[in-house]
Length: 220
Image (cartoon, rainbow, N blue to C red; front, side, top):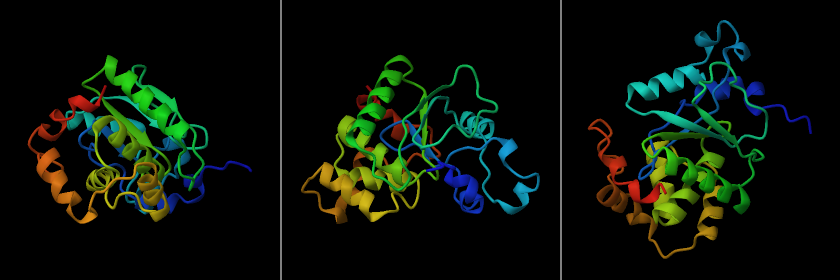
């Protein structure tokens, strides 16, 4: 296995996807695709790729939204692709996961432990998390956090992630693996409406951080 990063062989696909989502309520996790160093992009990349993401660009845009990102969790199975412009005060943890493979319990336990320890020290900061494109591995791991630390059901967690990073976890086998890991009696049809009314998902996006303030109980 030569471990060539998928995004470097599929740059157009990477560039077509939106760069990042909203914080996944009720947490301060921000899902995103992997940033790339400018040295990995062609000089005319901005003309052919609609959504270019570099780390300095991401951090600046989050700061403009009032979000200070203090940690990045990398779920990819290759070396870091954005070594340019990493601030000294930005922490980074690499929890390797093979592309298209459902993260195992050891992986999700590690991410949950890393996030919990970070927020015990820096509770007002956000954590950015990514795989290659920021949907399947990222969504699965975030949903595990929402279930284990925030008390959501698997169906509620999937709906919360989908609201924050549309269209959500894309592969059905990832969604089914989550439901098997955390079985419940939730009726999927009522889940999204329940999330909106109880957690403020989909509300308060441009009215401060009301939906995030409800999340303090699940970030420790």
